[in-house]
Length: 425
Ligand code: LLP
Image (cartoon, rainbow, N blue to C red):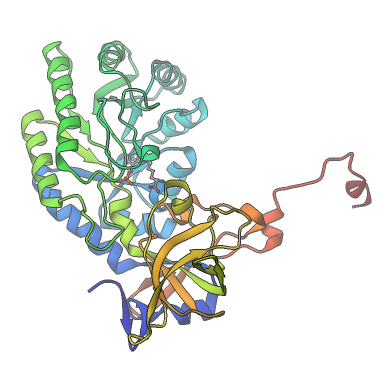
């Protein structure tokens, strides 16, 4: 049974009614199921166990402290891409020894912070970054374990904007440069090259695509070893594809786990994977209240109080998310309805042609599969407040991020001293 299910016609998350949460915290809000998060993690951990792969959760997918803490407690490490995410992972109790620092443009300050904390590994994406790490680790008198992220020239096959492993993408190092830098790193006193990394993008549904990318990594590690270097770790990135539509293909998990076991056997290296979306997407919904329903030409549009600032995926990637009425009446006929927000942009659309019953002002809808890259990518556009996040476990609920007040949202801003309003203040 899914964590989101109807009971007596009302959509629940585990044992809590979404309408009850809405009455409590107001809409829009994100709601996550702790049980669904845990089940997802356990399933992945169990399936990949034969390969010995460590799971470093990609915090960017959903960085809420409660989510990171829950996954960390179950055994996940963290894949992070900024000082902010390192701090989040540490604050959530993930040990530094299980944190991998990825990212294409880490600053000197971020590297110093990471090295000072003794993170498990830093994935290098440029020659300049190796220089910076060498300088910072010398200055701190600390040692940095580094892997080199290779660009394998393999497309993930999903949306253009979430593809990262093609030759002309900004990510990773060309293989020859990775080899050159690996040798250079081996000659440094405070930098230890431990392995190679790859992340070709998101929403990979075909194991063959991973196999191709990992094959390049295996070839490179064989070459490095033949040149006398130690390659003890391979970081295989994230990108495990999930289904957003009914009947859509997910990444076949068993085949993926089989591939990992094969890579582990052939390389003899310790593997890490960095899934984000796969762990959290299904475990979250965004709940909104219908403001009004209008007809625009042949289009029926439900304007709701959630918007592109809360969930930007449909606007940015034409992504599909299912929409469910919170109160279900099986007998009610359904019509294709567009669900749009109140933001002043035509692109502020959350769903196109969602099969919904007649809705009226005040009705609640839940936008499904919103646990990944939902709240994490939200903004305050149009002066809108960040939506709160609620975590449910069984019959209990916890507000794990509250809605800020408007004063809080403006608190970081000030008027210049030459403004007459500032004089008056
Ligand atoms: N590792 C690295 C180095 C990454 O850059 C990413 C995602 C991941 C792991 C996790 O990928 P996942 O398992 O979640 O696919 N905002 C987009 C997705 C961007 C992903 C960026 N990097 C979306 O909403 O579809």
